Length: 445
Ligand code: 4AD
Ligand code: MG
Image (cartoon, rainbow, N blue to C red):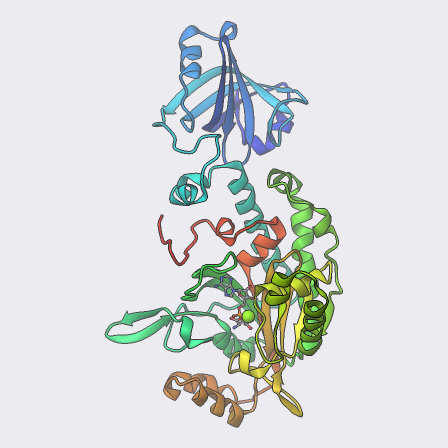
């Protein structure tokens, strides 16, 4: 009697005969002993074929297995502290091996490969433990985000991807031909979220968003996933209160559920263990002052040059990194200059050169992970702003309607999934946070 099991559950089957279906992650040939690391998607388990313990033809199959061949292995589970694998600590003493498919020579070997090569083979690279760990954490982050919102009275309402109008800067639009008329891939779901907010109170959308970012950075993708909550009668302070609860919950879920994956990617979890509400809140004015002071005090001329900035300019990555380094948790920067932010942001009363916006900057140099604001709810002011972005008013008529029928103060933000994954996993580049990255020089595979 054998039981078909998943590697993740192996500990429950000590002493039993089991069957595992999967792929050969690695094989070590020790003559009469073959050590096969078997990967089934839920984990990796070491399986040992001992020549004496099986018919010769079965041993021959085991001995001939190429990396990434697909197999069905049967054997008995024994506890062994030293057995490698994920979760590890158990191995399977093989009695049967069925070869499903003998793989061709696999391009990704345990030796080092260049990143471009790995990205060209991304469809295979996703099988590697490190990528496996990252994408499992990504799935949990999505789940944690959605659970928190669902548990706190937010309704998921989907927003369209094919849109007639820009939601953010018109310079990063992907234009497509919509039966002879121009349309754009959504940069954000926000404008529709605002309509949905008036129908349901607290809503969120979650989906792919698109930006034709013509720069190569380790923080930008052309296609990324964004989750955007939008709340009626919310102020900027309400927004920050909510965001810090939300973000700490996500980090906690990853720490609670993914110690093994964090170990695989060698993440120093002490950074994550500090992430609890509240987070520091500083104004843009204060951030600029701090940066100017830092620039003045530093002895490193290169750093001085990088940090130099004037009030009114947007932050670049070196500025965001320097601000974030002043704190060991994420930090809110609020009231940015109106000129560097989107058209829909509410100006600060009595000081219209700054707006009711807030970005959350992650620690360890990961930069902005969320961007949000109070929205303009005065019809006339919004009319002016729409005119200023230079797109046809007709395309925004529905959006302007929202300020004519029960307009309310409201606020919302967007959190970039890949930026969040990069930060939580401590990755050097955003390309590993998404299964198939779309970048300036890459849309394959
Ligand atoms: O700050 P952004 O542009 O804000 C908006 O789109 C608002 N409409 C959101 C809202 O208020 N509902 O983008 C929000 C977040 C950023 O903080 C960042 O995490 C991520 O989306 N993001 C990107 N991630 C990867 N690649 C890019 N090119 C990104 N652009 C923005
Ligand atoms: Mg932003």
